[in-house]
Image 1 (cartoon, rainbow, N blue to C red):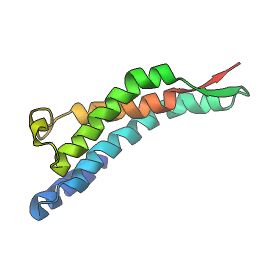
Image 2: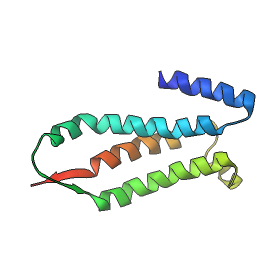
Image 3: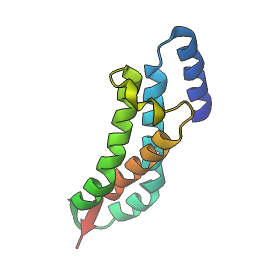
Length: 114
């Protein structure tokens, strides 16, 4: 269903020459999918009565670079940095993979300690 929605946004973008909604969807949808992939384990951890913390080293090592890729993807579609065109060609899977990893790492960085 998400792929159909993305396809429709790309058709509208090619007609109206406004690619930003399609680019935003290409960033947000994989992040939501990454969160959903980690959600079952998060629910199991949520039931434990322990202290919550945030794993900053994991987030800074993995989450920050993947978020940077997503930000650069949006900047490319805003037209601010056209030099990035080699990194983000049409149909590129880099933002999709980065979005899934970012969504997963954000939820995975929330941990409970004893």
